[in-house]
Image 1 (cartoon, rainbow, N blue to C red):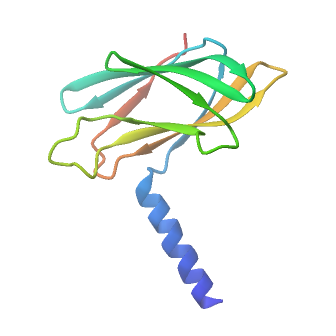
Image 2 (image 1 turned 90 degrees about the vertical axis):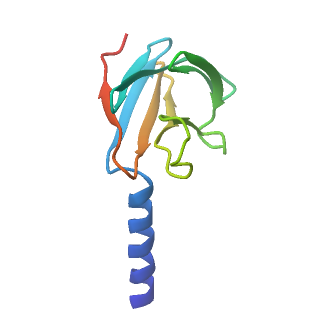
Length: 135
């Protein structure tokens, strides 16, 4: 029993160092955009994403960060359940680049909404996020 408890504590602490304690849960309707202002040092960048289509249990996501545009297809019960967006450019901190992980959790057919969890990995606490009003 003691060994199981020790393993549980180690795993819990390890997970806690991967992501900050904040997990933000959001819901978005079709073409409703989520905007997040990312600040570090004197730099401010805009991260935004929205979904445009839900078909065959796949959610088509359009996203942009610092004017770089990308597209993903996410599934709730698949290895393609999330995408990762690095928030700073790689430099001397190659292995500790802060990022945001957007995970598709479920789709509500009645409300035509998608549910997401946003998790931040920022071991050095360099990033400040400001969640802007949806548009």
